[in-house]
Length: 141
Image 1 (tube, rainbow, N blue to C red):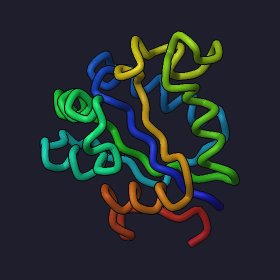
Image 2: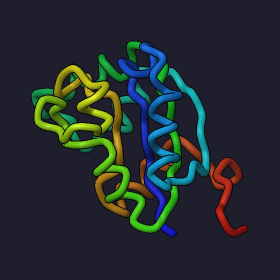
Image 3: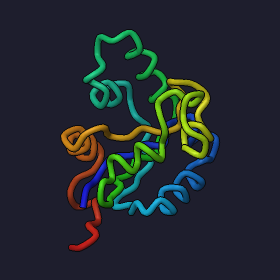
């Protein structure tokens, strides 16, 4: 069973789209193993996105991710990373497939409604950035 981190970003959360996105997650067969709402500080957002420090978009990304609350989740299933990334769609909502989260709810490359881990190593870091082991409910304890 693979796990991945999912974030409903400030744009989608402020538009009250979390319920619709959660419905899509569950309909896709992904299980939610942990969930919480947080409002990231600048330091927390910089720490989470540290791999992008120094890139031209880093400052704008940090500004965006701190402008309002986000919903963070641990999703679990076979091939959870790939399945969640397919459900989200590509980064640019204009290029995302019809029916994907980013196509339906995103408005730009930056304001694209959702985040997902891209590799198992990234998922491990990202999950533990937001959750401790007691907060994650395992499918088969």
